[in-house]
Length: 317
Image (cartoon, rainbow, N blue to C red):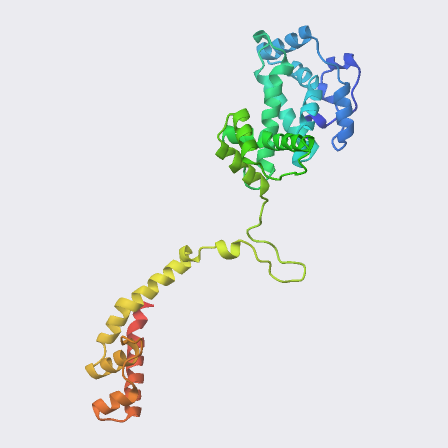
């Protein structure tokens, strides 16, 4: 809760003149006591409201501002109850509403011809809306003005459509909107049908942990992180891929240049040549017959050539 929740129970109307008006609100931790106290605080008359507003505006009288806030705490409690269906703590909703109320008091002009209660309603709702949008899901579901309007009206209108279906005895309770209902909602809220469908899709889904914790039986849980990770652009993988490319081109070419003609041909035939049928090059016996030596001698030449190439490739690693 805000600083408004830090002192003893409220006193009668005359107590509004005390030096610290926040002392009328009960201690932090008892929400029911706070709501009860806020509802018992007396409302200001028009003359008192204008007097305190002018004192705060012209003289920066914080005591006058405190009295304006105190007299409208019940309004915040009332407005916050409208948003309990979003699963967020009532105390937090009241807290955010109180922030909006303070902003309204700061900006209120008593000469505009409206009461503070009407002016503050917008600021209270705006602050609660922002809190809900930030905390209802890990990913923000509404950013534009039309999306915010849809977010706070979609569920209530769907409930209305369900009630209409039940009244018509259709026997069906759709979880999704039919095309006619989409058009009706878009027309009433003055948005595009595509935006209604998109917001309904967002609200119907839930949060999914990218990297879930291991399950109770000790096995690793499988989450989106397992198939969404792009290892191709991981810095270490990129460096390794570049090194492999250099070894496969410049490195191999340099290593082959370090061999004599016979050793190079043996290596190329044994390891680098691929025929049209995807088979390898010549065998040890084929090369032995061509050079008039034994297959074992060809193998020895091959081993010596590989060692020489490995030494040449060391500068590329």
